Image (cartoon, rainbow, N blue to C red; front, side, top):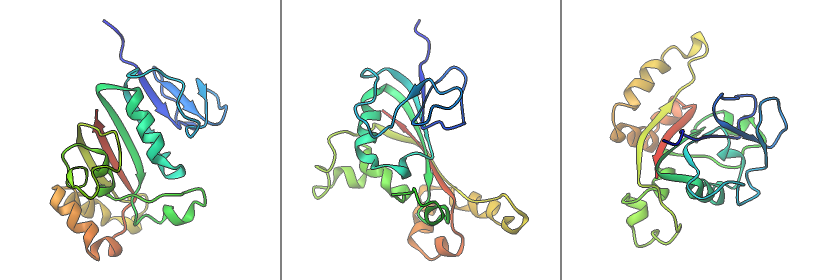
Length: 186
């Protein structure tokens, strides 16, 4: 039986034992030093069972990177992505951020969603993940000033409908989110 192979993309100082840790900086614990926009990534097709991309896609032109991640992920493998939500103050505070994200953003890259099936948009991308296994919107809870965000987060994430309603209305401006965490299955 082959061991599970995992890739931690853009790991920075978040070194994970038992994972291939890739970053553009030669930091302690980084196994592969590589700018993720230098494609293709130095891995074979279907090489990884699991890939983690925390706080990296907002820094790059992510569509070609996501396509290459799809290439190196095994069929049935899981990609976990964490990116700032479009209402996050971190989008504007960090000058290296190039992109903003909504929960709907990932529908463009998944089979049988409104965007991947529509005639107007089905030709956008020549790769698609099989499904979303989980998607959450997170909220800042680091200080006493944001105590109410625990309740907002629970309410918003009760259903996809509530997530959509949150993003589509002024509620998202009154209660800005922090991140989106999405799990995509190939």
